[in-house]
Image (cartoon, one colour):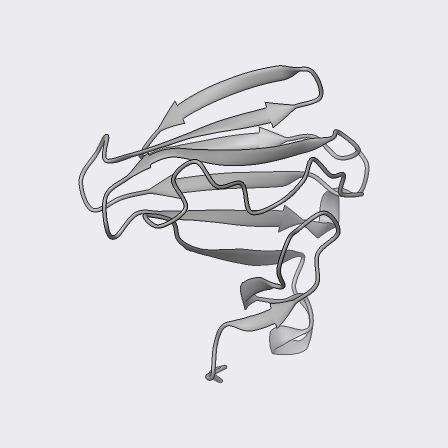
Amino acid sequence: MSAVENLPIFREVAGHHQPAPFLITSDMFGGLPIELAGAEISDLVGKPVAEPHVHEVPELYLLVSARPGEAEITIEVEDSEYTVTSPAVFRVPAGKRHRFVTRRAAPGSYCFGIFLLGEGAA
């Protein structure tokens, strides 16, 4: 058994305006096939945290809130937009230009990006 403390770990991510807060990185626990970044989003309404960008691996957006329906994001993928309300998960394929914008979020709402490292560009 082991633990990692002093989280999050801030790392540069292409397209993001500031280093992203990672809670799980691929080098933890001897190597993991995922990475998890994200934070509380109630102060991000209408403020994108990134420009449209691309990852070489698929990414899942996991949107959660204290109560169902308290958070909503719009995900831009290529030339399409999708709106989801908490709780929700949305898959962005590898190689697709994307970003999300928070439309509404009560305190205690979070959006996490889960990078599926084991899937590559599939």
